[in-house]
Amino acid sequence: RPKKVHEAAEVEGLRMLRWASGAGWRLQGRAKSTASWFRFLSDDFHGAQGGASGSSGSTDAPATENGAGGAGWRDSPRAGFAGTVGKTPLIRLTRLSEETGCEILAKAEFLNPGGSVKDRPAEMLVRDAEERGLLQPGGTVVEGTAGNTGIGLAHICNAKGYRCVIFMPNTQSKEKIDTLRMLGADVRPVPAVPFSDPGNYNHQAARFAEVTDNAIWTNQFDNTANRRAHYESTGPEIWAQTGGKLDAFTCATGTGGTLAGTAAYLKEQNPLVQAVLADPPGSVLYRFFEQDKLEREGDGSITEGIGQGRITDNLAGTPLDYAIHVPDAASVAMTFRLLHEEGILVGASSGLNVAAAVEVATRLGPGHTVATILCDSGLRYQAKLFNKGWLEEKGLLDAVPEEWHGALF
Image (cartoon, rainbow, N blue to C red; front, side):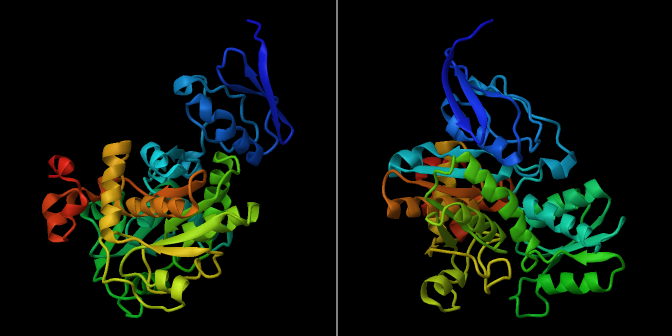
């Protein structure tokens, strides 16, 4: 039936109309590029209307109308597992935004098809090896990983017909090890020793790949295809989802890829966007970027997959503004706040990231927008992080408000 146009707006030559019924924005014509389609679907146009926002990545995307609950939202079929990686929602954390007077936004990377932010580099590391002719059909993909990159690689290898061999520290959660084995990966837990030790899981992975026919070591720490994955996807997505209204981005780093790639892209769009490294106990990065000393801060952390004892090739040259040290108690406390106040079940590294985002927001003052990463689901840490005895053993039970102890097992 005829509708009266109530508002109109234009972005990159695309005309947007809002009907008087308030049902949402509709695109006149088709998007000319993925970037313009991202911008059309950004919160600038859909945030007030509710419903999903994201991109099919198609340059021929259909017109979209977002009503309450996402009514009328459309998407295109994605190309298998690899085509489903990325395009994750950016969640406004309500309670924390109200407390700080800032917009605290978190990228829901646990909604990637393999369940974590590491799906992005996993897909890119394999694709890069294929593009360079290093990996032939039926080959073997080898990696040293704390778990999530391995899980992403195992999914990709299943989808593309490769064998997957994972070397990982034996300190990682049972849930991650079991998931890798369930996915068909050849999992080889080894003692957790420093990078300087020849027995480090990364060195063992490299040696195994060297003596295996048609095999690659994806080398997630120093292969800059990792950083490229975030420069080409995570950064552009955050920029589009915030409509370019972003003051800071912060997250912890293990390989350095997420922080480096995302920060590089965001600062290219606006050099005033702050890039802040969040660091757990036992890592050298906080002191290196704040005091120019490659010395550890604290004795170790209960977080998995983040913190570092060196500057990786992915992290080298990252345009950082400053670094924040986040104690384990703060990470655990925020993890439980996210669960019980926001309804979001994530791991401790996500809790650390959000705690850092709140600190950055506090330094900036009200009226600013800070984005961070929700790395993976808390389901991967049930036996530890949500276990009362384990928290008590680590001296972290007091970080969880007593009213929430009933949810521990």
